[in-house]
Image 1 (cartoon, rainbow, N blue to C red):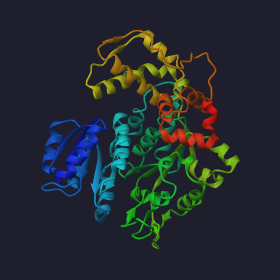
Image 2: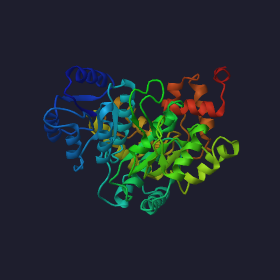
Image 3: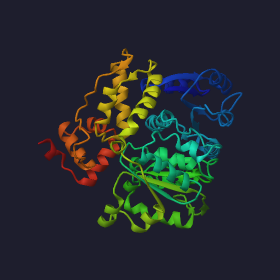
Image 4: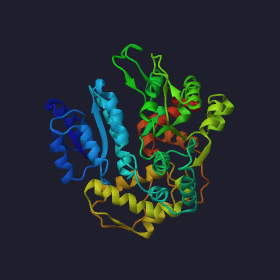
Length: 441
């Protein structure tokens, strides 16, 4: 990923450049806004990390300039606490996210990882201001019956301002579907704010959702604008909604009903105008029976349910998906795009892909690294755990247990093999109450 870092503080610029280079990004730097615009005009970048206040041209002016360009990188704003409201304006103009100074390295890397995924998928890096639902749905690769149905449903629900619940296995593109709905809706000119409920600290999730006032709790040195407030006029995407703590579900329900929030530690009621799209890879109806998810919240979210099909149910899409992914990944690695042959594609179609499109992308990346010198890929690829299409499909939970046993309960290896995050693995282990010591034995 090519990243442009724009900041007039030399020491911070050097520190962040070193951090991001070690994290695998190709970093270019600019010491002011004018230099950043010149570099953006002459070089293609996937990501832009810019400070708000800089000499000559501010970060806000850069974002405003890029918001009209179709080839704009995914943009992230750095700002001080005192200028957080300006960062909200930046997101409404098209910034993907913002981070408050002093910069937390781990938080920055998490934001950039998510921004990289958006850039890789060629999803809108900013609010889409023009175009149709048909064009947006075209970013969802595949013409199988399952994908054709999904695209049709997206086109139907996008203009209707109702809540949507997207259900599907990990790696099936639920966030891409959410972005397609937003981009084809009447809110396309507003912000799209994504929140991963599984990745949030349970003690701070209320502050993350609704913001907090200065002094609201220990460490709350300044006011913080919450995600719902940031999404005002646009769409908020609540990913992994099934992992939302039960204690927070009632508060979320009240916000959805009353369309207003109160910051933690505050007394002011703030009206919000947002569309809510939620997503989960869990069986929420099962959680209703177990009493771990509120029924009233479920029906409030699932006004219009959508299901993203697993890759094993649309093998006819694998050849075109492979071509699109190889083109993108080869560009990232700076190598020529190989030509996949019939035997190679047939072997991919015969695999059950528990990690879905994300796992396919990871597999192709590994193959590109290992076989970058081969212009044609004609041989069938052998993958660990390969399952032919005639093999009965096992559940996600069974696959998780099997993979944990094979890796001796190594969480990182398990996440990599299944094409999901470590956070997801831990969440499923907790939900299934798995005993890792027994699995190792």
